[in-house]
Image (cartoon, rainbow, N blue to C red; front, side, top):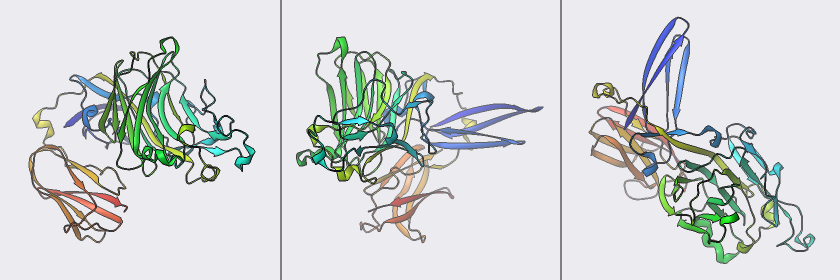
Length: 403
C-alpha cells in the first residue's frame, strides 16, 4: 500500500511542485529543486491492526508525547527529571542526577546510597536506593492515542516501567518489568510483559485489572517495543514488537488526560537489588531508545490513480529485530505481482539461504530467517546481506546476527 504526498513549494520567483511516493513504513524521501531540499520521514505505528486506521482516518504524530532522545541532553521542554507528586517507592527515591541521555538513548539509572547493607537499619522501609524518573510536563495523554516505546530493562531486581498517571483517578501501566528479580521464585518475570490498570481517588475500590504476556527473550537481553492503543475509555490494546498481545477493560471508564512517565522502582516483594548490581554501570540502567505517540485525524491523502503508481519503487525494508539472535522478519513491498528471489548472503558474497524463490502477490510480503543455512545448520555470528531480486532489479539490506 502506498501513499501520495504532494508538496507545493515557492522559492524566490520559482513555483515548484514535487510529488513523492512513500511506503507505509519507515521511509525517507528527498527531492531537490533549485537550491533547496525537502525531506519527509514517515514512522507509522506498529505493524498489525494498529497500522490500519479506521476508514477515512490516518495516524499523525503527537510531538509533545514523542521523543527520539537524539543527542546527549534531555529535552527539558518536554520532560521533568522528577515526579511532581511522588518521591518514589520506598526503599528508593528518585534522583534527578540518575537521568541522562547518552548517544541518543535515555538512561534511567538506579544506584546505592550505601556501601554496605549493615548501614541500613531496615532495608524494606528505609530509603537506601536512588532510582530515576522522567515525566512529561504536559498532561495531554488521552483516549484514542497510540503510544509505543522501545526499551531495554535494567539488569536489576527493580522495575523498568512505562506508565501514565497524575489525573484524578486512573493509572495505566503499559509495562512494569522486573529485569532480574533477586527472589529465585520470581525468575519467570524476566520474560513477562506485564500491564495493569488501577483506580484511585473517589472512584477507588475495584481491584486492579491487568494481563501478562510471555516474551521469547528477557526484557534485559535486548530492546523490545511496548505499546498501548488507548482505543477508547473502556478499551486498552497492548502491543509487543508490533503485535497485539493483550486487551484490558479497566474497572471504570478511563476518560481523563494523564501524564506519561518512565521510571525505576524497588518492588520489595520480588526481592531487593544488591549493592554490587546497583554500582555496576553495565547493569543499573533502564534504557529507552524512543517513545512515539500517534493520534487519528481525518485522512487528507489524495487518492492515487493507477497511472500515478507506474513508477512506484521496489522496497526492501530493514529486518526486525536487527541485530537478532533467534529469528528476524524481513518485509518487502511489490508494486505488482512478481516472481521473487529473496536470499541471504555472507559478507564474502557466498549464498547462505534462499528464503523465497517463487511468485508473490502485489503489496507487503514477508519472510523469516532463523540464522540457518540451506542445510539447517546455525551460521556463525556476523554481518550478512539479504538481497531481493524482482524482474532484474535488486535491493539489499545488511543484517547482524548474534548467536
